[in-house]
Image (tube, rainbow, N blue to C red; front, side, top):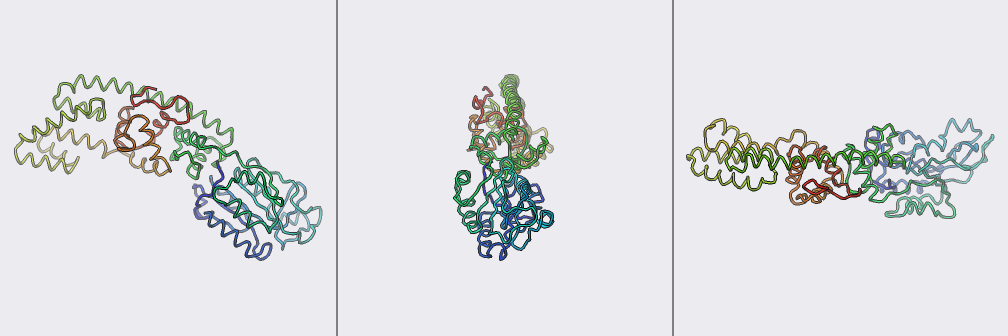
Length: 452
């Protein structure tokens, strides 16, 4: 994942599952650092959208799920050679045992920062030589893979935070690779994936059912949350950051499942096309209301749906014109009111010549008005960035009107793939659609007819 700064929720919300970006700052304003310097650092972090925890207690970092972590410590570095601490000016480094009582080892912050995290230590001039077997400075710290430790003089802290860490559009990895003369950098950030890499992850997560997930090729909190969900299901630490080995496993499993889903879609499309033709020849081609209704109720978006609807409309118009005035008025009112009124019309006038048309209208309307829990699923799925646009684009790729008439396009796709054609984007539809139109896989998308 890229190192990005995104708007974070309040720190109190970190106990929940949502991803957020957090800055833990232990600056000891007025003691270790001048109050004005500490204020500039905190203000820059707030402007960048960080949730800020002030103080040396690392507990807030333990609740981060998928967000990025920045730790800023100011003080005097002391080390035993194996363990290092950063002490405020007021603390006395009499011995390692004494320091361990009042301070948190630097390694704890580094471990909690996790992959993509940055720990910044602003060193102040030694207040007094450390006692016991302690040595001044941080020595050569052990930095976990994917985490970065930056050590610099305290007087350069505010400029480094504002101009390097938080500068919009800055090449952070490049800046850390070539720091200034007074800045030391240990470790390196994870490799930054390209947009195609991120889109591949997003598609893989969608195919495997870790929804909602964005489909925009951009990393962020939504993608990190879906990654964390996949990690938790697979027994990994759910930190929202993929290791190279996890990327390989994610893409491999998605390729296997995606191939099965795409094959299922092709099979369903071909079977659906055969059944479409067979039913039209058996019932629709005769041109009677009952046969046309049987066809349209089974294939509302079928290959012959256009001619069938036109024929039904002509028969309906003739029946309406021939109906008694009172019956005609009741029918027209029921058409305007919808499915419930159409049902009442059929129940009240079962022998009317208009009853078959009322029943057909009711059944077709109910397909879109009664999608079960699909409407709720759609609301959840399209809340993720880029999903609605991505789905429309993928439907367009299949020759369906995804941009101009997305509800109809979804219903047509569902009908042709043997799904319930309610026109709402449910999880099953999204997974099959993504599997069939993976943009980063070889072979390209399938055609609307189901051939690939």
